[in-house]
Amino acid sequence: MTAFAELSSPQVAELIAGPRTPVLLLPVGAVEPHGPHAPLATDHLISAGMCSRAAERLADDPDVRALVLPAFDYGVTNFGASFPGAVSIGPDTLRALVVEVCRSLAAQGLGRIVIVNNHFEPAHVTALRAATEEAGVAYLDLLRRTNVARLTDEFRSGSCHAGQYETSLVLADRPDLVDTATMRELPPVRVDMPAAMSAGRHDFVEMGMDRAYCGTPAGATAAEGASTFDTLTDMLVELIREVGRS
Image (cartoon, rainbow, N blue to C red; front, side, top):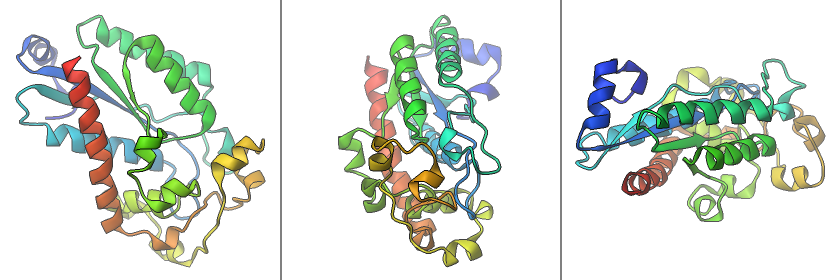
């Protein structure tokens, strides 16, 4: 069992008193348009997929026990607001939710927590960084240069919203949610999202993403997604072990 909320209350008490150090994983995503081919839940699916894989990989670890908390599926998604389906919350709301959940767990002796996020809108990331610092928990920051360097060429390019990188990950986990016929017909769209954000563009349309994607979704494969999940899980397991030793 890797889902924290599937435990009973006595099982949580055993977890706290047990010989293995509990480390809780909080997947964070967003409800946001990901092109005409991928689901609104793409970011959440990637975070949850990483967490479940890491917890399963550590199932028999003698030192740590990783469990996955119920996810935060809503985030700051202003860039996608002009497209149907985008659901955004304010950065202060996100920060407060993360802080309060982490503090509630820490008060019970479950303060070793890792926030796992795959939605990279700047206000969303800033809120999570502030929340993790305030709550005193860990954050797997996939935008750190050392982590970026371990990921795919498309991710490193910055042109990777609902493109080959993200779509491959969804294909590896939930292929039923990808419209592959539409995916194969989509032309590449090159948008350097970090540069566009730095230039003051505040939504996908202003960036040139009039179908809410950039990158090369037609090149996505489940095999690439599985390989990328392996790399992402490696990163997460490394951080879990570090947090478990702290």
